[in-house]
Image 1 (cartoon, rainbow, N blue to C red):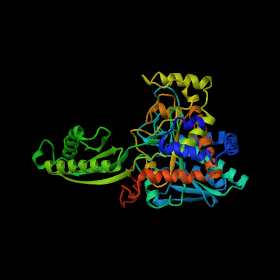
Image 2: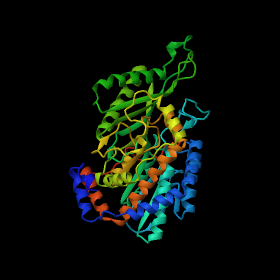
Image 3: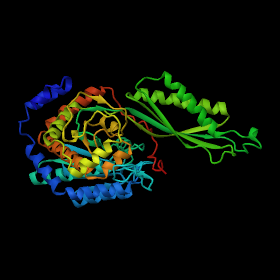
Image 4: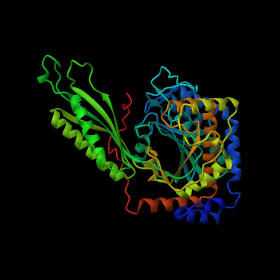
Length: 483
């Protein structure tokens, strides 16, 4: 750990130095070896589960079979599983052990609509509605594998503590974890661990953008567009007027802001003035309050558009997410475990696949072969996406990592990500993530002082006056948002 402290400063440096006084150089080593061996012994089974979920490609709140596969695996391994938590049929909590600390491992399993691809290195869409372009089939399976390995280690060693696997649906726009957080399901958790598929192995602490979304629905008056246009009031005009005003607004928002939309319904025939139209907006910013303020400006644009087109408008908030709160104390532990494990090499077939994928990516600065390495530890960095892990991270010390399940240089939400995620490249990265999560958990169980340090950092970062208020208000989970 001495090599890590040279790269850190501030809170993280203080935390790691403190840990050096209570953790011997070999601390947690046996736990890491035992759990890694357990995961390797079941690697083929976990690869098969991930492939099943990849094939199913179920979207948010519709992940019935995907959730069932993971729940069954956990139940068979001795976990007590509660399904349908927080008003979400596909959400679950699987628990083993007793007492403190309580370590939660997050598991996602939803696919993305509108992006499909066979597990081949050239563009070949499939005839289905969705695909795992964000790799959540690997995410949920690796977290399940890690939880089972930790459960077996707790039983074998007689160590006190509780491990939980949280099955969290609809991360892609449905905010499943927000409803779990709002419902108090993390109130007794001491540490949360999660990971995400990616194009590199990295455990640097990261932040994300807060995000609030809504579907804006305009209603007008239908009529014959040629025979009696004066009688019509176009709901599509309302949508287009709103979009125009929001696009003008872009000149006057902070540089870090992101606003994007898609028209989900614009009418059915050109000769019918549409009496209904809908547009779906995301509004993002690194700061929660700023994201909410920007969202209110978008609402005002919608209200103005309705007034100017003599239509009516109503909107439904679909989801709202806090920005991700980094925890350098925990990140240091995850980084040490990931570094000890390292990445993985491609075999001949995987190398040929990767080279063909690489040729479709254009100019990227991450070389082939970097999947065998771990990226240097950096102080908290921000990425321009959003995640519902953000809400959890404001309530419980949370750490994450990325594993190279995609060809280096691949972006999320792309056909190239779907393709690699359906091959052994995805499986190898998934196993790296599972082993890292398990090794981190066993370290914390053996050295519970880590929890106090991580909790102190969280309290310092969020401030003494923090009160959690979910951005979704009191609405129920939008179980039909993908229908």
